[in-house]
Amino acid sequence: MTQHHSSEKEIGYNSGSDSGSENHQAIYERPKGIKGIYYHPVTQVVMLGFVCFMGPGLYTNSISVGSKINNTQGLFNALNGLGGGGQVDPTTSANSNSALYSTFAVGAFFSGSINNKVGSRLTLLLGTTGYSLYIGSYLAMNIHPHAGAFVIAAGAILGICAGLLWTAQGSLMLAYATESQKGKFIGIFWGIFNLGAVVGASVSLGQNFHSTANAVGNGTYIGFLILTLIGVMIPLLMVDPKKMVRTDGTKVSAPRHPSWKVEIYGLWITLVTDPWVILLFPMFLASNWFYTWQFNDYNDALFNIRARSLNNLVYWLSQIVGSISIGFLLDQRAISRRIRAFSGWTILLGMVFVVHIWAFFYQKQYTRQSLPPDSNNKFDIFSHGYVQRLWLYIFCGLLDAMWQTTAYWIMGAMSNDPAKLAHFIGFYKSIQSAGAAGAWRADAVKTPFMNMFISTWVLLAAGLVFTLPMIYLRVKDTTDLADETLIRMDDSGKILATDEVPRERTVVIEK
View 1 (spheres, one colour):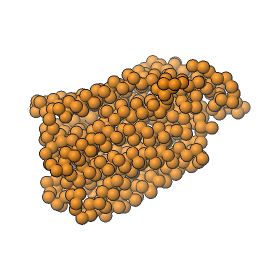
View 2 (view 1 turned 90 degrees about the vertical axis):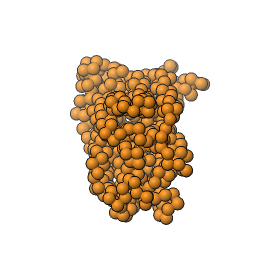
View 3 (view 1 turned 60 degrees about the horizontal axis):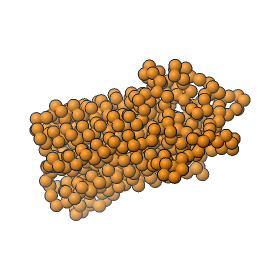
View 4 (view 1 turned 45 degrees about the vertical axis):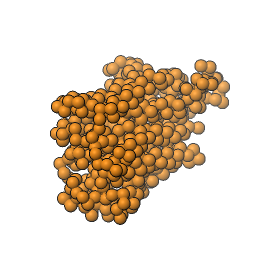
C-alpha cells in the first residue's frame, strides 16, 4: 500500500512526555474498486455479523421462548423454540448447562491470549465449530436417545468455543472502527447477529401459532447443522487483520503473536496497568443474569406457547432497534466522548428503573405456586392485558441491546488495540457466563420468581453504580498511547516508552 507522508494526514497520540511531542501514525491509501469494497471495515464487520448469525444467532431466539414446557431449560435447549422438545431429559440438560457455562466462564478469561497468539480468523473458525458440534449432538439425540454423554460433552466443548468466538468477534468489531465509529460498528454487528434470532423466532411463531406439537425431525437439525458449517467457513474468507486499513487511512495494529509466556504475561499486564476495568465486572455479571428472569420467569411462566413465540419475535426485533439507537448516540462527534459516555450511562439507568418498576406490578401478581408450568391460565395473544405485557417485553429487549452495546462501547473507549481489546472481551464473556450460570442454577432450584426479579434489578443497578466512577476516571476524549500498554510491549515482554514505539504500532484517535 502507498504510504502518504504529508503531515496534514498524520494522526498522532499525545506521547505523555513533558515536551508534548507526538508519536505520529502513518496514513495508508485504501484499496480501490471491488477490492476496496471487500477490504472495507464495514464489509468485514458485516461478514463478522454473519459468522455469528450462522452460529449463536440462529438459535439464541429459543432461549426466550422458554423450554419448561418440555421439562428442559436454559441455553442447552436453545433449539426447543423451533420445536425440539422432549428428546433431552432434565438431568442431561442440567449437566450440559453446567458444563457449558463452566467452560465458557473459565475459557473466556484466557481466550484473549489464544486470540492474540493464533490470530483472530483462526480463533473465529475454532469458535464456530463448537456450534456445529452442539447442533450435531441434538441430531445424535434424535437418532440415539441414550446419547446423553455426547450432548454433555458437546456442551462443554461449546463453552470453550463460545469464549473463543466472542473474544475474537469483539476484538475485531472494536478494532476496525475509528473512535467515532464504534457505536455504528457495534450496531451493525448486533443487528445482523439478531437477525438470526428473528429468523428463528419467525419459524417458531409459524410452527406454534396453530399447533402445540414440539417434535422436530432429523431434517430440521441437518438444515441448521449445514447453516452453522457455512458459518465456520466465513472466517476463511475474511481479510487478514494485518492488511486492514480503517476508513481514515490508519492501519489496524494486529497482535504480533509473541511467545505463549509473553502473551499470558500480557493478560496480567492488562489487569495491572488498567485496573479500572475491574469496576466493569458487575456490569458484565449483570449482562446475562437478567435473561433468566426475562425468559424463564416472565415469558415462559406467564404466557402460553403461541404468546411466547410472538413475544420472542418482537423481543429480538427490538434488540436491533435498541442497539442501533444507542450506538447512534454514542457516536455523536458533536459531543465529547466523555459526555457521550455519561449520556449512555444515564439512559441505561432510566431504562433499568422504567422496565423494573413496570415489571414489578406484573411480577407481584403470580408465583411459581400460583402459575405452574402446566397451568391453563397463561396469557394468550388474545387475552385481556396481553398487549401491555408484550410492550414490557419489548422494553426488556431494548434494555438488553442498549446494555450490551454500551458495555462494548465503553471497552472500546478504553483502547483501540486489538490485543488489549481481546483481553477486555475475554473478561467480559467470562464474568458474563459466570453470571448466567449462577442465574440459571438459581432458577433450576426453584428460587421464587420475586427473588429472581429483585436480584436482577439489584445487579443491574449495582453494575451502573460501579461503572460510573470508572467512566469518570478512565474514559477520555481521546485514547493516549500511554494507555495502550500492550502496543508498547515488545516481544520479550518489556514495556517501551511512548517515544520508542514504532509508528506502525500506534492506533487511531479521534480528532
